[in-house]
Length: 193
Image (cartoon, rainbow, N blue to C red; front, side, top):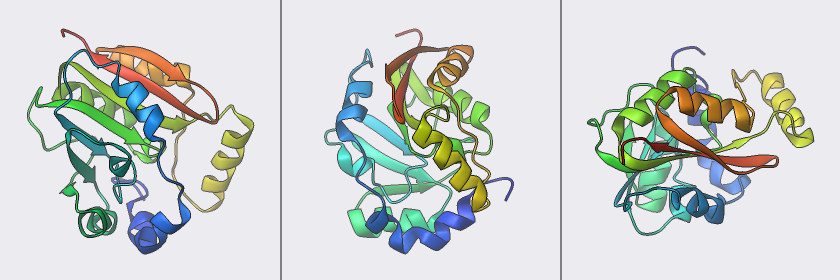
C-alpha cells in the first residue's frame, strides 16, 4: 500500500466509519485554530475522510480533502460538505490560498508526512494555522494503537508532539504544542503574518 498509504482500507470501511468512530474533538480544534493570526474564512480538512472533523467546526468555508473516494462520498452525501479528491503531499490549491488546515486523526496514515507539512505551509496564507490532532506513540494507549494498526497491516507512522513540532519548524511554521495526552494537538502558524 504505497503511494496513497492506507486508502484502500478506508474505501472499504467508509460505510461503517462514522458508526464506530467517536466525534472529533471540536473544542481541541477550535483551541488550535485560535492560534491563527488571521481571520479563518477558508479551511481545508486534509485527510478529512467522512467529514467527521469538519462537522465539529462552524464558521469558515470548509473543503474536505481526501484520497479515499469512498470516504469523500460520505462527506458529500452524508454531511453535505464540499469534497476534493487529493493527496496531502500534492494539494490541488494555490500558494497562500487558505487560512487554516486541519488534519485530524489522520496524519499517521500519510505516506509522505514531510511533503504534507511542506504542502500545508505552501497553501497557508501568512498567519494561517495548520492544526494537527494526533495520537502520541509514547502514551500507553498510543502504544496499543500503534500495535493494533501494525497488526491489521497499516503503514502508519506516529510521531510524538515534540517530533511533529520540530517538523513544523523545519517547514517554516511556528510550532505550538497546544495539548498533550493520548490525543494531542500541535499547531503550526505560517510565518510572515
